[in-house]
Length: 273
Length: 276
Ligand SMILES: Nc1ncnc2c1ncn2[C@@H]1O[C@H](COP(=O)(O)OP(=O)(O)OP(=O)(O)O)[C@@H](O)[C@H]1O
Ligand SMILES: [Mg+2]
Image (tube, rainbow over all chains, first blue to last red; front, top):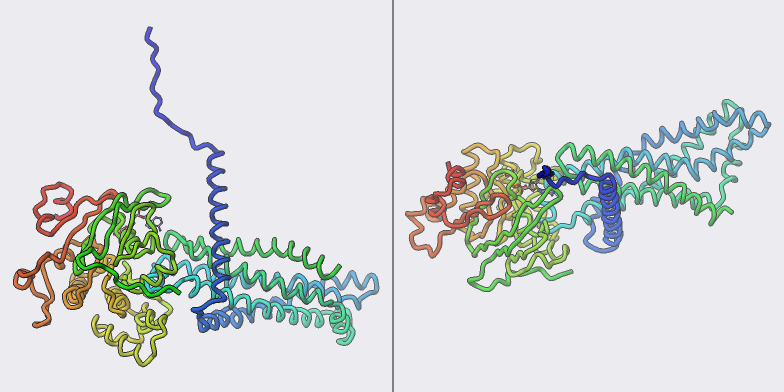
């Protein structure tokens, strides 16, 4: 009796393991090309040709452009902090400590993160979508065809501009945050200017200032390079530009918060303890 | 910084040579085993349907994309072995007209055209007349300080040609220079390309899916004496070779390669359909 064995065509079901493997491989590959871009951009920061006009233009877009929202959010963050903590301090009769709390929290933590996240949303997205549209309209290829290195002409000026302006924006956020805190403290707790500012300034140690300035430098490098990276690898038309922008903002924001934790740990260990 | 590459091309040698070039992306192979040569003064017309890999081929020829295998030799330089830094220098010697023009939309027309000169730090006094001359050549002088989004598609294409020409490169790649343009504007562009070929002796690769353009290039020449386009049989009898050759891409491979007459006489059904 002849057994009928149906000849099944060679059909390989896409196994979940293989899919995971592929996804993992892609992640590692993009991490690799990201690191390559960062290294390349950092190296090219220190050699000619440079584009100072582009740096200034970007500083204007990032610094001056972000100033209003930094002023506004900084002020209200400081205010709301006092609002929330005032009751507690009142309960323990230590209202004078308000200045300390606001100063330390703002300088160490809130100022850098708020400024970083705002600049990510405002300029990180702008950079990613601008470079993304340049890629899909072949302007980046045209630049390379004209003999200009897009990393030098596009990435490096944005990196320098962000690294120079984010610490300044952070300082502004810290300052207006303290002012906001003071105003609220004055009206809810009846603190005098001398009481508040004395405590606030004395609370800050050298380590806090280092932390408050080191963080925005690192955040700036993250924002500029992540935005440029996703912008430059945009694929697939206008839709791709939208996707690149969203990914850049999400990745940069998460990277800022994660690195904030580790930087905080490291800097606290070095300077404060 | 690497020295500026020169045309160290031995006379009689092809200016552009593809040897068994293959390139693919995640979605599959785009070019497979492509070989051809372009001699100085020749215009190679790359024909193929949309998505057949014409743009990819031109980008490989400019070193903008690296093939997975094979060799690309242009002006005596093996592009596949060059580093990106050297390729940047090398590309200053060629002109590239992109499919949609690819003008920098944050710069005005003059800054677009003078981009390469400014990169080379040419003095302003020298830049301006050269930009005006290039714009006059493409009959776009009026657009000097306009921005790309104020121009029509055909005007953008012409500015893009001016930008590619500013340094008078011996080789120009045209990517679908008439794509999406009306017949009259297309004819203007083709006339420009003819002038460059016949007055400046530019060697070129030209991708298109419009046969009218291809035959316009094959059958006409630009006569400098009368300053107009003339049919080639009145003028081109003494040529050693036909300046226009064809290469048809299909399914990632070279489907046909040869002169105009061969293409026209071919009995191949695919070519016949393409020609009709
Ligand atoms: N950078 C890239 N990444 C992935 N795939 C690409 C890339 N560039 C081109 N391709 C693919 O290569 C194929 C050929 O594209 P190409 O742009 O060369 O076609 P074309 O002949 O120029 O078409 P058209 O006449 O429409 O311009 C397409 O399938 C395209 O999706
Ligand atoms: Mg194309």
